[in-house]
Length: 208
Image 1 (cartoon, helix red, strand yellow):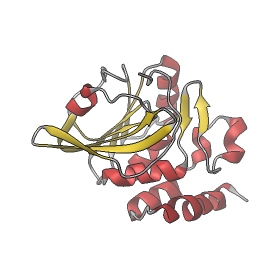
Image 2 (tube, rainbow, N blue to C red):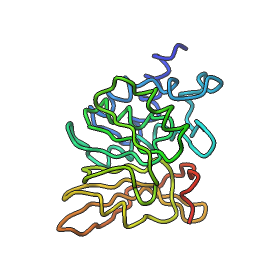
Image 3 (cartoon, rainbow, N blue to C red):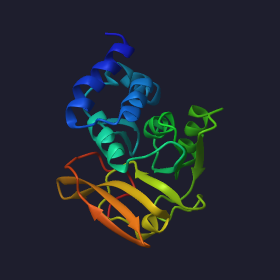
Image 4 (cartoon, one colour):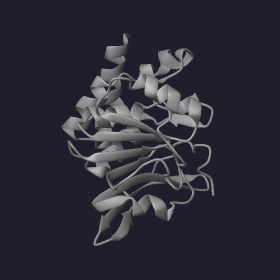
């Protein structure tokens, strides 16, 4: 199976059947080649139904979990989106393909350099270096913040950088159980809901 066919099969068997119906998101996932965001030795399994390690301490989410999490944010074209712990950049690329203005944040020089190389010439993705918990290195408010790995605690700083009506999407681990959590900022206060269970890998630096 060639990569384009594998990408179509991924969307048809892993994404659509799990209540992902946003046409813009589905189109973005169809257009974004996962294999380009993986080490060479993992390209052949880019569309497997499981998380894949892109570098030490960083993972690419399974398509089902990422698709559902992005859909829950209801991201719209032109919105300002921050991807925290962007890793190899796949989630940032999908959001950019949806028409968002994306800032990809990482805390390591090598990862930042790789992201800058990946998105060289891309007008809709900006790469920043800073602390993942305090979000140093980024300015202003965001419409959507997507956390690239599972966490045990959600820092208040993440919620502070949401603009009015902003959404924070994150997977929270409680022992071996993981749940997607969506925060909505309204009237200066962030309230949370838990739309589905998921168990993505925890990135380094995100433990309690």
